[in-house]
Length: 387
Image (cartoon, rainbow, N blue to C red; front, side, top):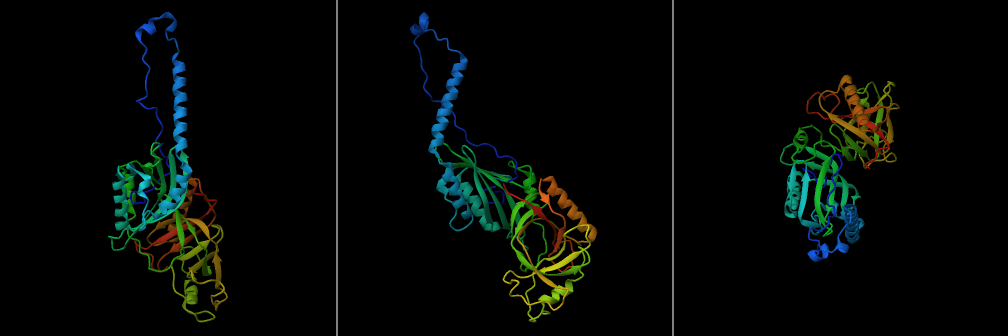
């Protein structure tokens, strides 16, 4: 992956890889002149018959070669092997031809040694985390994988997080049964052919600094990263909440912060987390909830009761949301603009956003003016699938 696993994205359609051909060394039959000159032996077969013979020969050869390759076993192999792409075990290089063609938008190699070098380089500079979603046969000699790659760019002091999602099209050599090509497509760009300036810009723009406190956050997996948003699958989490005044407001924050700082039935102090959410379930409803996420090692049964009636505890079910990241002061106008932008992008891409949204502020709600402060607008999705 260009800055990704060696497996990659944009859901533009993968090209077909290897296809069987008749051997150029196939024997030909030479007739002596005396035979051809004899009237009863003149060859009068029509060209159509020859074409039919060639087609039949192709079918026989393709069928014979296909029978030698167990693509189902290769699919199972990739399910087992690819999760080791960046760990100490590594991938099984014997499953690849020596001349394996690797391409992603900004990287290319034509040998297994170059392919392995790229993996080692990514491990050293980016500390990647690779998540394999699925593996499928998509052609007679082709397997496609879908993945997520999350990396930290270690040379920069703020260690920015780079995220790439996409597909990798793995070509199979019909003669050896090994992988002979690996072409990555990123979801976040349209120009996926090497060398892609759009792909290079996609890398650089993720290097910008967002200030995010080193605090616990709700756990989620990034399923897809488009050009202007992410789709995330959140684990269930618990929040302490109370009524707010508006999405960009901080009314009620001191009350829920007081709960985790010890103003509860047990006077128990609970570690602070990030982000602070404000949520509305209906843009036409003025009701807004402001929430602080409770650490993952707590549950509703173990938490102390709030001391104020206006404060409540609630478990948020696991769900899939789309998130748009931005910085600066999240005024009500800015939040509505970002929510509208995100909703339009989701509809454009054929997704189904639900009513309402959340504003996530990863820093003190009263101090989000700085251009490097991280904020997000999130919208719930209906029936999202990676297929």
